[in-house]
Structures are given as structure tokens and as C-alpha cells.
Length: 522
Image (cartoon, rainbow, N blue to C red; front, side, top):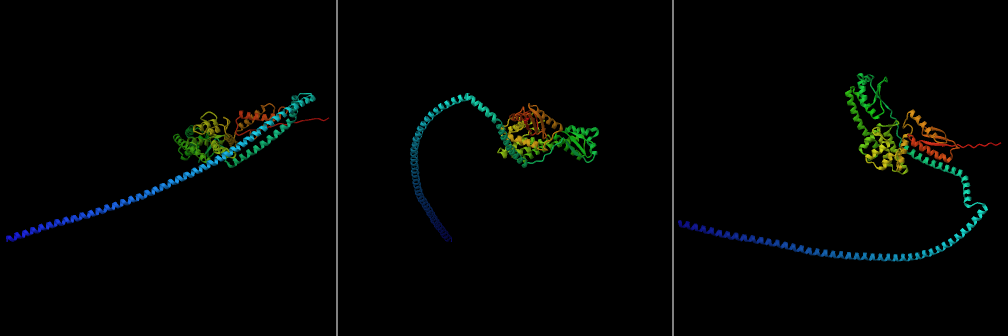
């Protein structure tokens, strides 16, 4: 039994060993086969990469040959083009050399012709000189014979002849000069009227006069008592703060604010309207309302300046200058609102400048700023035109514009045509009917001063100031003032008026000279 077990165990071990050997051999062969397959795959991959590399090398060789071929072709093209250009340049040089040679030949011929002409001219000059000497000898002989015949020297005869001609033609010359001057003045006046009429037609603005009083309506007359206050404390406080006079009289439904400063009157009017609407009127409330109104008006001032800029379409004006421009809304000149006057002058200046070919934009800008000094003229001493120039200079305006502004009242010399245009536009705006008003006393005084100035000249018989002082008519003594002297006198009177008098617009001076010749037949 044990022997069978031992045999069975030995067979088992043998079978196991055999199986192990077979497994090892099978694993070896399988591993070897796997390695062989991997080696074959690796060889195939290497073969594939080698073929790809060979293919790329072949493509590179083909591309290199193509590049070499293209380079050779470009090289040949460049060489060919260079040769063509060289041939072309050579041909052009040959043509130019041929033209130069031809011109040299022509020039040589012309030099020869000029030399020939010069010789001929010298010969003619010599002949002319000889004939001139002969003529001078003949002229001297004739002159001597004429002096013997006339019994006087030639210079005396010439002087006497010219004296007679001068005496005969002097009156004719005066008449011709007068006629020519009248024709020129007529043409100038017609053209000026045409330009001015065109300018006024294109810009026709309403004209309103600013008075020295402002009325404020009230709901009932009981409000007058509240405005006055106990022992007049309300009205006194109001007048002290605003700087105006408040007139509360028997006129029903209205209170009057009086003052020469438009800005103060405007602030006072707005303040009083608010107080009347609110109903609470006492010193503390008055101070509060007046301060609020002043702040509102300050904003309005800038708005007025901005509206003027927008209306005229002018660019390049600083904000601070716009605010000063807005203050002109509350300034007047002879009752004419200065801001409206400035806007009107700006448009008129632009139109006139465009008509005569000047700088319309510069004229319009200078026209708007020409009176800006009036906004601060009550604070700064000096002429408003010069103050306007200083303000423009402060804000970086051009020197040409500054000269135009300063010269519109002849305070400085005019340096451009635009300066004359601004002066004319300013006169047009100020002098048209309704634009400005004067008191009766100043009106009469101006007329009287005009007539007195005209009578101060020697030879003046009578003077009449007419057309509201726009024209001065002078009657002269004909035995003292000749026609030529009358022309000098009219200019002298005009210059005297410009230097000694202040007036809006222009003054026309007219001189009348009448000559009467009487004779008696017996």
C-alpha cells in the first residue's frame, strides 16, 4: 500500500516536473515569438521612417533644384532688365547730347546774329548822335533869332506863356476836379449804400430802450403797507441791500423800482416778486431772498453770454469771457442794450466784411467783443474801448482782434480793413432810428456845440445843425473862401468835430458857397 502510494507520489512529481518543464518551454517559446514580432514591428517602423526620410530628402532635392532654377531665372531677368535700362539710358543720353549739340549750334548762330545787330546799332547810334548835334546847332540858331524877334529871353517867354495858360485853365481845372470828385463820391456813396442796405436787410433786429425804472405788480394795495413795514424798516432794508429806490405811492396795483444799474434793478425786481408771492416780508427774509435772487441772476448772466455765443455762432471764447459778455445784458448806452447792440454789430460786421472780401469771421468776433469793456467800465477807470482791448488781451485773443476792438473809437490807429468795418457797423447800429435816445438838454447842447464849432472858422457866415445833429451845414463868405479853400475847410471842420466832440454815429459837414456877380448898364 505504501509502495503504491510512493509510486503514485513519484508519478505525480514526475508529471508536475514534466508539466513545469513544458510550461517553461512554452513560456520561452511564447516570449521568443513575442520578441520576434516586436522586432519585426520595430524593423517595419524603422523601414517606414527610413522611406519617409528618403522621401523628404528627395523632395528637398527637388525643391532645391526648383529654387535654384527660379533664382537663375530671376538672375537672368534682373540682368536682362538692367541691360535694357542701361540701353535706354544710353539712348536718352545720346538724344540729349544731340539736342545739346543742336542748341549749341543755334546759340552760336544767335550770338553771331546779336553781334551783327550790335554793330548795326552802334552805327545807327553814331548817326543819331551826329544828327542830334546838327539839330542842337539849328535849334540854338532858331532860338537866338526868336529872342531877337520877340525882344525877350526864352525863359521869360515860357514863364509868361505858362502864366497865361494857368490863368485861363485854372477855372476849368477847378470845375473838372469838382465834377470828377462829385462822380467819385456818388459812386462811392451808391456802393456804400448798397452794402449797408444789404447788411441791414440780412440782419434786422428789434430795438428796445432800457429805462431807469421797473414796475412790479401787486395783488392788492394792502401789500404796500407790508412792503414798507413798521416804521419803514422793510423798505429801508430792501433799498440798502439792493442799492435801488423803491417808490410806493398812490398808483394802484404797482410798486416802482428806480435805479440806473440794470443788474441791481433786475435783482431787486425778482426779489420783490418772490417776497410778494411768499407774503413773508421782514428784514431777515429780505436778506435771504435777495441773496437767492442774486445767485440766480449770476447763473442767468452766464446763460445770456452763452446764448449770444450760440446766436452768433462764434467759437474760441473762454468761459470766463462768456460770463463777462453776459453782463452786457444789464448795461445800456443811451438807452440801447449793449449786449443786443454787440450782437447786432457782430452780424453787420460779418455781412459787410463778406461783401468787400475781408475776414468775416474775425469781423464778427471783434464786433461781438468790441464793447465788452462796458461790463466793467464802472469798476475800472479808462475808455471802454481800451478796457475792452485789455480784457481780450488777458484772455489770449489775437493782436489783430485787439487792435480792431481798441480802434473802433479812434483811441488807437487802425491796422486792418476789419477795424474800419467794425467802426462802420458800430455807427450803423447806434445811429439808426430808435436805437438810442438822448435827453432834450444833451440833444440841444450838442446842436449848439456843433454850430459854435462851425462858426469858429474864419470866413464862415452862418451854421445850421440839422437832422438831430447828424449834419452840419455851413454858409461861407464867397469873397473870403474860394472853391479850393472850401474843400480844405470842410476837411478841417470834420477833423475839428472828431477831436473836440463826443457823439454817436457820424456827422456830415456840408459847405455852401454862392458867388453873385452884378453889373449896371447905363
